[in-house]
Length: 198
Image 1 (spheres, one colour):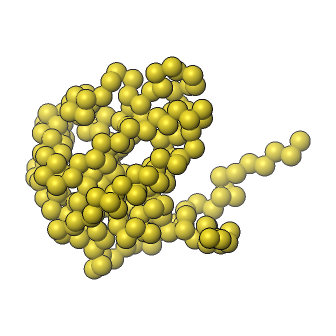
Image 2 (image 1 turned 135 degrees about the vertical axis):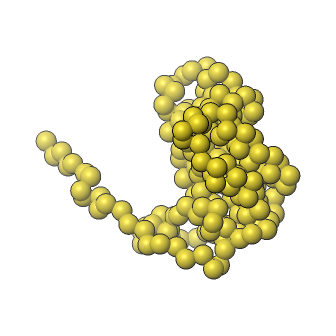
Image 3 (image 1 turned 45 degrees about the horizontal axis):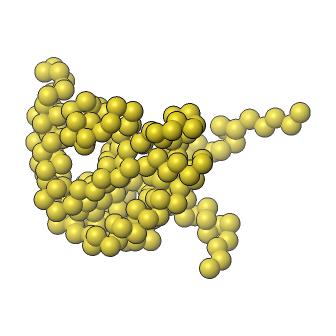
């Protein structure tokens, strides 16, 4: 199968995050589709084939349980003056539109052959592979990050080791055909590039 440079450019530019409000209520993705997504993730670049990604998949009732844990952690770690009741309640509504959640973890190479940031960069590439796979698989989603993701409470829930780094939660569902996506833009590459010729 041959792709032109323009094909690849358009595929990359069409990569998108679809948040929960853009997912179809009652989303159900077959596990075999998720397995294909994860297989694509596993072909990310990896120095020395460390392959530092560790993935935990929540499906079925596990999705609801995951959001219940997120809700409890939000309540536990949020200062009273920053607590938002609508956000707290929203956690238990999200599962209705979510089919699977893939927790993405950078697992430190036990032999520590390379700097830790190389493990993290490799896992970020695995995330991009998943993003680039969504449209071809007919599914949608986004990488959720933030204070809950990086909390000790979430680390305990996921059973992480001391040097493991939680990267994010890939929240997945079927795209809602009625969802209207706002236009996307990027700063032109030449505005963020310096050429050094000598």
